[in-house]
Amino acid sequence: MPHPATTGRTPASRGHRPRVQPFAWKLEDAKARFSEVVRRARTEGPQRVTVRGKDAVVVIAVETLEKLLPPEQPRQTLVAFLQGLGIGDLDLTREHDTGRDIIV
Image (cartoon, rainbow, N blue to C red):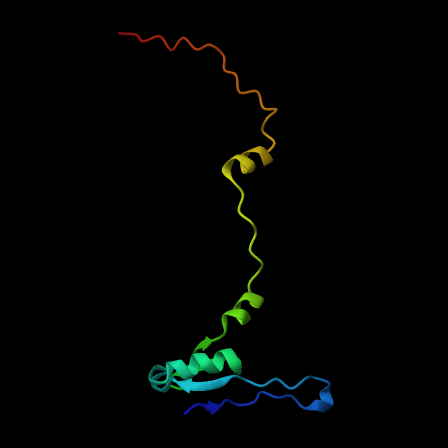
């Protein structure tokens, strides 16, 4: 059965909002009850999983993950990328090269 981790609350007199830590599951319990871990992550918030008493991973809902990640940038085509480089004004002509002389 998961047990509430230490609350990590700070005294209200300091002007901080109380912060509740996610539930902590032992690895063997999390494996045996993975569906419940996932359900709780989606409904109650992050779920910590511990290995040998130490935090190992946190299971979070995908909506929470999307809030944490930077927004995706739209991908552009190669042509649009190259046009955006502004290399249209470069002179790419070469001098006539007759090769080199080989001494035998």
